[in-house]
Image 1 (cartoon, protein in one colour):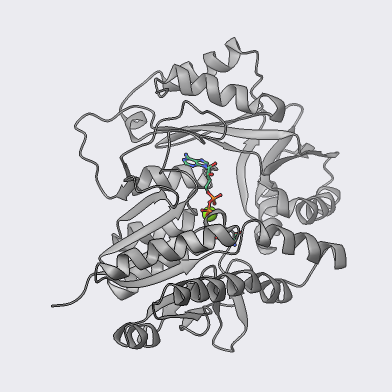
Image 2 (cartoon, protein in one colour):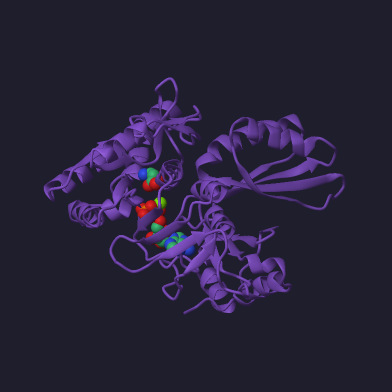
Length: 406
Ligand code: ADP
Ligand code: ASP
Ligand code: MG
């Protein structure tokens, strides 16, 4: 009979120091003792990735993306070796690999590469040798053997992709909270752990700022129907299952509240109101690989209008440079930059079939004297851009109003 195969991923906080690495080793070994085959994906220790980015920026504020990947991939290389050593110390066989070594082939879009193919031969061979296989998360290599990384939080993607490719029986994501909560428990301690959540809702929450899972990893899980169990590396409790359909009969209207403080708003004033102008602006941005999120165009006044949009903070300087040049070209007015914003969102599949949700959200913000600067909607979410200083207060108020508090 085939042994049960489990893919386990441990995030940076789970391996932040020696004690925690030993804790992870014990946990992994406890499954090996039960007779399971194990593929363990690990992130860089604690805040290593942030520290490496800071270091690079001190050397060159606009580092080459290829060299950035070379640098950032070292974080995970440290963790896998240390975890292998910790498992050896417990008397078990383990072997660590980089993404490139286990055949994770990606395209060449450095810092946000896409996985093209995974050759699992090496992993299977080592599992057959009775070893626990430890894989560096967040990385791969191009066919030309250039090291790439998979975007922030990319170890989640490594784990889900490996679980799919290996046909694993379980995919467990271990982190520093007990599962997916109705909102970030660091902001609202009264947040409730969710037992089951659909791929669609999790994807929306992740895209709108719930950093607990990387959005791209959920896309892959949804596409290939890989159930994910998100749980704590510090407790034995069952966490949250991310699956296709949940058991509850009646959907709750709002399942979660998210906050994203990593965006900035750019406004181009007095844009000539004629066909082709918006296309010109956004073509330039997408041509430079910049993702634009919310877009708002005001009512035209004297054949001129203001256009505002948000981008990730990491793209702000590149985006403003491009937009200033486009604005001159189309004879628009000033370009304004606001980094003091936050995007708060409510998410829930139940929003499709219930009305009045938007009105409730706006009235909660109004009651709390929070001004709304931008609004955007999707099938299962509603977002508002507000001043950053009101962010936490707004999250708590919405969490309470939509009945999510425990
Ligand atoms: P890891 O290092 O394990 O990858 P992350 O820091 O990426 O962990 O993600 C875990 C963190 O995500 C939690 O500590 C929590 O503060 C935050 N978080 C944000 N939104 C949520 C949510 N809805 N449910 C659970 N955690 C959330
Ligand atoms: N270490 C990488 C990051 O901080 C990948 C990960 O943690 O998933 O983004
Ligand atoms: Mg993470």
